[in-house]
Image (cartoon, rainbow, N blue to C red; front, top):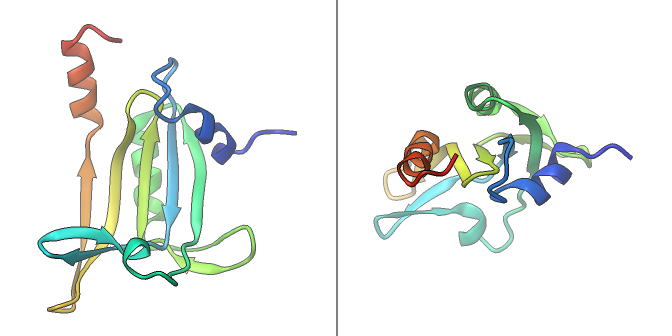
Length: 134
């Protein structure tokens, strides 16, 4: 049986082995500001139904990042046929775990919603190079 990107990601994300691979994951989860921090709605609302999962694997970080941006905001279906909007897309790699994230964030006090993007790949690469790791 051929392994899916999700199967590979379970065994490879953060294992610090080479060659590095980049896994794109999507979900309908989104951030919400609370007490000056951002929490995930799935952690704040007990009955929130999260959809999504790991959808693709890439050999190149920039390609994985562009794929994540391409999924973001799109409609998708999960394996059970549930339709959802992609409110969060991430890229995780073998060397350090999550390295890129784009997500929707809501401020419930003002009803303002915006897109937040966080990129750590190059910071982790620099950190590893400074310590003599490949």
